Image (cartoon, rainbow, N blue to C red; front, side):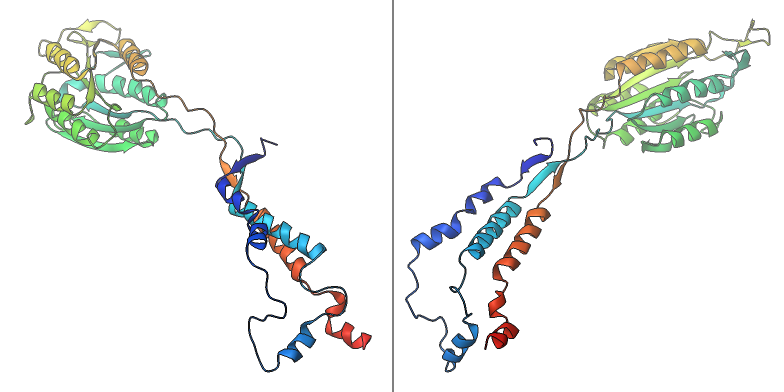
Length: 339
């Protein structure tokens, strides 16, 4: 029974059940022969309205019908509720912004993806796409940066659209330089309006801040004040590309990664700094971020309360109609037949 009936929303209205009985006991009785309205033809009305047969007004079965109708009205007013089927609340996760470096150095082919030699951006796309598959419940956004930073996908639960924007990104789309500070500043601006303690930025870069208006350390201070955790990933080989046979070729002009600055940014904001020299290490880093920033698991299943007041209300209407229905002897054609 408890599984079907969830109780009453307003149980205090059940206190009105004895109200008619109390009124009858406490109020003075009407005077014999008294009338609420006096009209010249009152006697004729009495003759027409008075039914032939036993008694007048509510009495016997009619009184019980009226009492049951009142009881059903009180039950309906108290709003009986039933327990519905269990419902699993949706997952609630982080507000997660991904920042991906599209500077010229991301085109360097020093990564292996399977058996193929690929550039850094292609390898990063493959790993980040797999990371997105595991972030069900997160609101994920994407920004890219080179000479400037641009938001290409707002925070959204639609991870497929974020993945499509990521796969469409190409090296040099935002310029061939590296504006790390601007990327952090833009991410903070996008995350600031979101609930606190759930704001996370994952920054992937392979170079040094060489452009932009905002210094990376100043941007880290803004992120710290806005409660945005920054996980920084320094991605790239030690210099030089890979040949078709997997041997590293020298590349004197390769850009060094400013690991010290990335480490300081992560420390200031409560995040972590990682170094990935190949695709396997990058995949392991995103798996570690999964552990550091877990998606909140769904809460326990709940059973919603479904309103059931219409059942006693309909029953009260039926009982009321039966209580005031005319007796067979009072029907006009029955009186004519009796006469």
